[in-house]
Structures are given as C-alpha cells and as structure tokens.
Amino acid sequence: MALGGVVALALAFSAQFVSLPGGSGPEPRSLDLAEIEVGEVKRLRWNGRHVLVVHRDAALLESLDSIEAEALRDPQARRGRQPEGLALPERSFTPDWLVVYGESADLGCELDLVHPQEADGWPGGFEDRCRGGRYDAAGRVFRDQPGARNLEIPQYRLHGDGERLILGGS
Image (cartoon, rainbow, N blue to C red; front, side, top):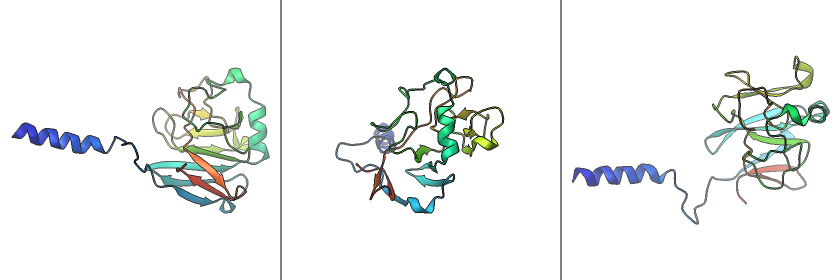
C-alpha cells in the first residue's frame, strides 16, 4: 500500500517535467518592439526564465565584427541551444534584435548588457553577475571565460514587419 503511494507520488512529480505528444508547451508571449529604444535591453520573465531582448545599436553590431573567431569557444554556435536559421555572427533573425535567456548557460547567473564604450579591455556584450563571465553581443562565450557554452536563445519569431516579437509558439 505504501509502495503504491510512493509510486503515485513519483509519477505525479515527474509528470511536470515530461512533455506529452500534442502538448501545448509554454504559452506564447507577445512584445511590442517599439517599447525598446536602440541600445537598450528589455528584461522579462517567460516560461519560468529570464529573457533579454536587446535592440542592438551600431556599436554593439560593430563589436561583433571586431572579434576574431579564435577568441570564442564556439564562434559558429554549433553547440548552443537556439532556433534553426539564425544568421551569424549576430545569432538572430535580424541584426538589430537579439533574444537570449538572461542567465549564464552554466550556473544560471543573471546577465548585464555592457556596451562597448563601457567595456574595459574587451569588446562588450554580456557579463554574468556571479563570476564576471563574458559573452559577446551575440551571446557567444569568450574562450578565456569560465562559461563553457554560448547563451541559449529561446524559440521566437518576428511578426508584422518586425514590429512584434512572439516568444514560443510555432
């Protein structure tokens, strides 16, 4: 009798982690991109995680061109989690916008956007709040940093001539 209760409890607990075929997945979330000024970042919560939506300015985009591939652990983003079809080096569907989960890929530390003009001795991008791990403006981890993987990119799409961002969905 007690064993049956333990099994039922274990099944109920594990069901929250299993995605059944035909399941709806996380609820899509829409964001008006006009709310985000050039050079700014919007932080939000979606699907239980922090998401950063960055409206990249010319300096952030130029910083990507200044980085040698040898300076990055995974410059072609082959090992990271991201939607199919993202352009490199931007890792986005359009160069002006970057959407990443707002935590480092290894320890889950919150990230801050560091503009190139504020970065001292590096091209700028993201810095985690725990160890100071650094990523470029496309979320690719630098080779000499503690993080082992690029920042994850959630499933998203741009809608209405790029006026809205939809997180999740198909």
